[in-house]
Image (cartoon, rainbow, N blue to C red; front, side, top):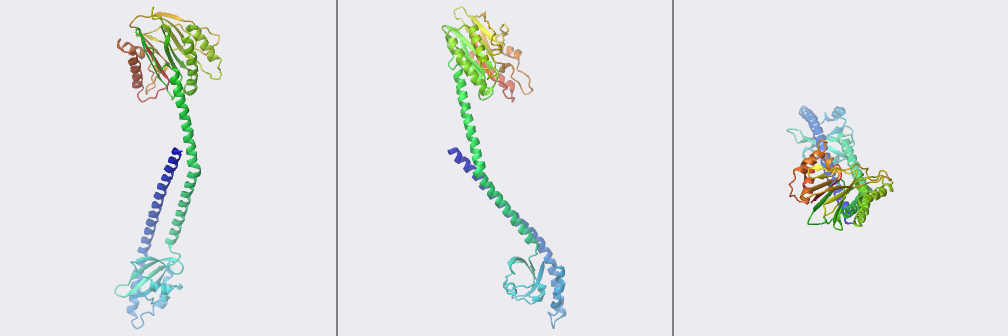
Length: 431
């Protein structure tokens, strides 16, 4: 609920800021457009008024006895001026030549009362808002006034701008309504869905952590540690280790798929193998049952590579079974292993175990193919040979924990900016 309110407040705040920016931009655009048009028209009108002012001055000088006689015919000179009419006022504002208004029915009283405020102004005259330009005839107490009628070009521009503002306001209101009734609810549903998915993924991560060994067994004759790094939030790699009586049992596996389906398969196999290992089931029999379990679940359409081993502390003999898993490293070389099928391919397949005599000081490195198939930015593989060389250079006294962490750091340095392309499981055992 708190998150939903935050989303609504955030979007409404953004809309408010957008509205203020839009209003300010529109206002200054209108002012700028008005100023541009007014200034352009003003300059043109002033040129005309200067010409007419000289004509009036000459006419008044030539007709001293009857100085306004020429004004009776002066209206005919305005035919070329379609957008405005001319009025002559004295210094008190009294209209001296109504006939000079080119036949317009002007409200002369309003023109008389119109105060001169600068060289131009906007005023309401005959029911329309008109643009007025004043020009004082040099040397005479007379104002030549140009009155733009309703054909004044700026009025058309002003109307267009006003319609533009109305459209913008309408669009803004539509955006607000859409945001409140559609965008915000849709975003809230998306976020709620994302939260549910994240919650489910967190549950899957917790499930995966419970599936692998958390507390590593400790003994005077061995040191063991393992690490798991999923490519996605969860993955299909697995490791298990624990005491089977006085023996050390361990498993490293890799489910073919990735993500949540592989994680659930891995969890199922983990529970299955853990219980049977602790019951002391022979490794070849356990591998057969794992193979049957996977084959009996065709809906998953997965298979699994597995390496299982048990080390006897009395003889240091390791019994192991490999179902198509990666090559285990013993000290600085690969362990010889009989080729066997991957679990989950053929239900009737029978697995068998092998034995190996270990010695004090030996180190075993088990891993999934996410190690050797790690790619750098040029798409080159980390590879088996690089892994062997790396293992040979590790100090003999290095703890298993440090070995696992060092390998993870080496893989990260090798990938550089390239993403992890597969799940990674690592287990190191020192005798």
